[in-house]
Image (cartoon, rainbow over all chains, first blue to last red):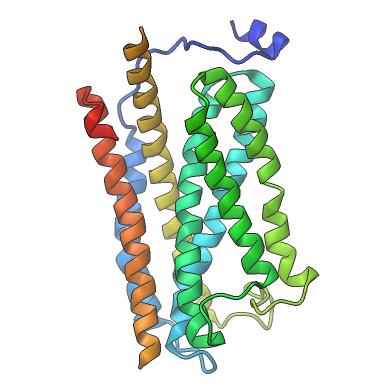
Length: 242
Length: 41
């Protein structure tokens, strides 16, 4: 079955694995690690990390804003890789992962678009400015929002998987544009100096790394939960159409 | 002091977004496991 699929480049209309596996132990572990790390992150962000001399308390938004942005990029990278794997093998399990990661990635980028303006207002004096970083980031959010909308408009599973895979691959090219926008064009947004010698002070760096770990486990938990929910929904749709 | 309000708003906003999404997914998952399509919207 899989050899024929690979040779013809087709995506299966039906699946071999009709049953949806129960929630995995790893998902539970990711959930527990997230719940353990979240209060630690809060304590570190508000009590352990020193207050920024220039930006004052507003800089504390950094500890949720930056991890959300980085894990959002990771989520879209997973969409990119899964989409390539889907087109290469025709195996619909990659479509499940891509769809789940895109939706979770949109949640993370939405968090960035909420926390960013709340940080920008006290520091820049405005909630929003059409700066290259902010504009390219808004475009990234719109691309993956359109990915979700596209999936809702194509009822045939194989066509939906193929169309979304193309958008998942093309859309990812905005990620390096977002990342490099602060270097390519004049931007209000700060440069990424986190790991450089003159970058972040030690306590701020440790707090940021705890934030990245927390958000990584939260991403893995949400990805696992969303992938399973997607499979359950698809099985339910198949039962209705039969 | 006004800046603290923005910080609290950012943290509460993020908590509501992530927590709300996780809760919505869990409700959907349970409804679909029961075969309740209406409850899984």
